[in-house]
Amino acid sequence: MSALEIKNLNVSIEEKQILRNFTLTLPKGEVHAIMGPNGTGKSTLAKALAGHEDYSIDGGSATMDGKNILDMEVDEVARAGLFLAFQYPIEIPGVSIANFIRAAKSSRLPKGEDVDAIAYYKELYAEMERLGIDRKFTSRSVNEGFSGGEKKRCEILQMAMLKPDYCILDETDSGLDVDALKIVAEGVNHMRGEDRGILVITHYQRLLNYIVPDHVHIMWDGRIVKSGDKSLAIEVEERGYDWIKEELAATV
Image (tube, rainbow, N blue to C red; front, side, top):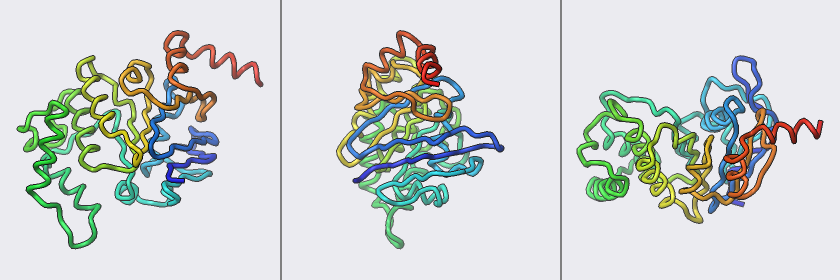
């Protein structure tokens, strides 16, 4: 099966265990959402899968279409088809958006091949228009001096141009007003399809009003403890997470 498969993944940072036998299968063609309170390991999951060096893999496996990604370097994971949209996108002074995305696209081509400039800019401008990004931004340094909404739209622009097999959106809705949220959500929905799996990590149900997931998972203490459909997200919005804690306590 074409899927991002995570089985019994254990991850720690500075000898503190964060993920505990975390298991999830994200098939291509589906959108999954992970919700949970602060400190439960949602961002740790995203960064560990992307190969962040601060995180120690203590056990378990993670494969993408059958390929082990835990032994890959960060750039190898990205070239293999995994995209991570950060909660707090970093600034890259001196590197323009246009050159940054073009270099990323070129890195995924066979050695000796390059991106056709005319076709590239035609596609870039079309995607920028879809996301409400002014063409002048192509010459600006990546995320430098950007507002929160501009940074998040830039992340979705990168995703649209790179066309990864699997996308992890780590709290992409953080800091967005309603208008920016709708634009970002439209960009993500445009990327949905049978050849791509999308994992949305969020605290709040509001994002899922616009990006309706096929499955919703509740994460607690480093693992998934409950799964369902969109109605589960609505229930969390209405009741908070205390009832999850009470359910877990009752099973101990």
